[in-house]
Image (cartoon, rainbow, N blue to C red; front, top):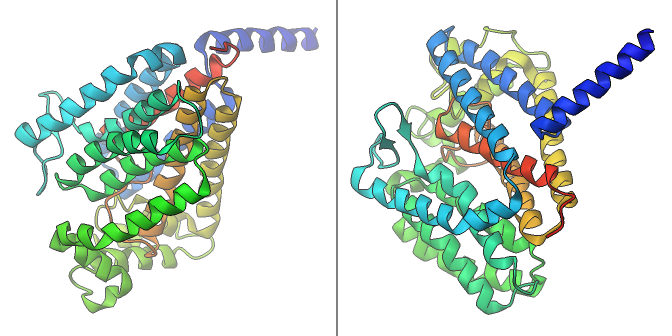
Length: 371
């Protein structure tokens, strides 16, 4: 009797999950990461429930969009891609006129909430590149590479002008991943890298002074310990003081004593490291590795080039977010304002990430339909 009930419950659960159109392992991993985010944020914000509630609201909104997008077929996403790309570009142009932010024009005030259009480009740029390459012969020839380059460079330049160099580089990486996954030959990759290297002196000329200072600070943060080096030094102290087992929940001295800047956003990983130590960090990285691996597995299951390229780009972009923020917090990469995905407090970034996972879920649930 008990065995029969177990079978009935399992069948019922499978039917409900199939209607929800979700991949259970990926969904459970995202739920676990969201729960960790709320726990760490509560400590980093000194028990500020309004901040935790705001993050929970954004996670809930992102979760609803995640489920909604998962029901849209990749074919429909491919049809809508040019319009989504143009719409996000228009929103980006609107930022130049109506934008606001701390020393930069990055957000649009919509009354009820502030909206950061550049976050949309992290998804619409790889969608557009995949849309362009889908009907063409792969690997792409030089003429297609030039067109793809323009599709990537235009939004990247607009975002960098805000200025938001960190997001601009992530958008460029997302589009470049699609090109790389399209099977572009290694000699073409080397040629593009050489051309990019020749542009470095030109790019250096257009950097703002604070952006140059961040690069110099990476090499020698102790040269200005109370100025540009403060963030990296305090973050490294927090990470190191966690030891093997950590100081314990709500016992981060760097956060409690306000030494650690941006402790709920860009440097929340440092708070986590101090409170939960090396063991906690390893477990969190295992969770991230599981999510990335599952996303790549979904990309491998896709049945058309558009879905494969897009899913692969989303997966690799998620890896880059984790790698860049982790390297930044550990003092191995310059401070570029990239939050730890789904762990840091955020608005548009949290929602856009979950929408991206919804696209992956759509690709997974429609994988049996070959178009």
